[in-house]
Length: 379
Image 1 (cartoon, rainbow, N blue to C red):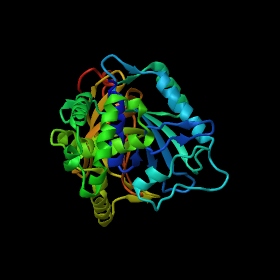
Image 2: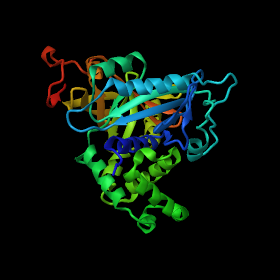
Image 3: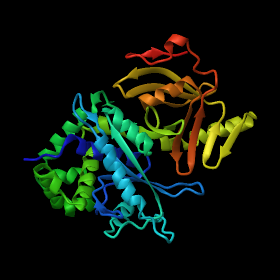
Image 4: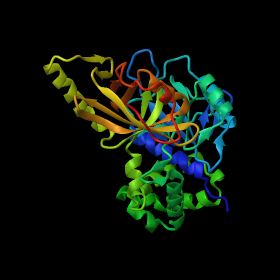
């Protein structure tokens, strides 16, 4: 019996996180056509850009969650680059933007999958998520070719992500008949339950034989189980608090402790309004709302792996907390905290929070310039 692997299930977890972060994300129903051939893309995310001179972005995602002492090698990065190169050469001569009037599910189901090559006017980007580490050559190759490396929280709700995935696998494998799926789906989904159970059976017998459409429905099942299963509820709750942000222009993952990002709109606008009454500097640049006296306060940092640090941060305005959470950053980014830092977080469609540190915010003694293996205090 060939069961679905841990990192394949992890891909669906990352897709669920992207969906919760505001991306139109999912598993395509068909193979995606490039210039040379078609490709099995496990997870895609669509980002609609709101500024002129930028095409909408199609994100091709790879996610790897290995066991101990395993690393993401250059072969994974090469595969992502190969897919990107083939798809980038399918841009049409005539303008054909991604439809914005379709429902998210219709975008995933109907927009992609042309054997002769995709015909969308869009920018293709690649990203690799992992709870582990990357080899030196994988990092060098990814930086040179514009492929983003993101560190996923290794622990969520007090347990390792790999342990939550094992729990998810056990729950999925225990579902043997349509009646067991009834509690996970709304009434409109019940006629498809027998089809879903057949897909689950095939998943644990020969996952590689699943057609793209079946993988799409498997993602539907996994999201339903994550949302409704009581055993997985702590994991799902904290997973929905994970958001994508930019640290000095490079994407990172942050875990918010109090608010989901898209619930922050009213609070950010209220801060803007109060500042205007006090004649403080408030600016809006395009879709970016910048509150100039926000302070990004780094409290401590802890090293998880050779590549990954978690940094506790606080964004406040006159002692009013706006964001509290943890940032999961790549090792090459930690030196940025020696200088001025700009954290940008999309909080709603067309609105981004920009938090800046002051030039004197992170001054430290010379001997504390580098992170240690344990928590390090900052002043």
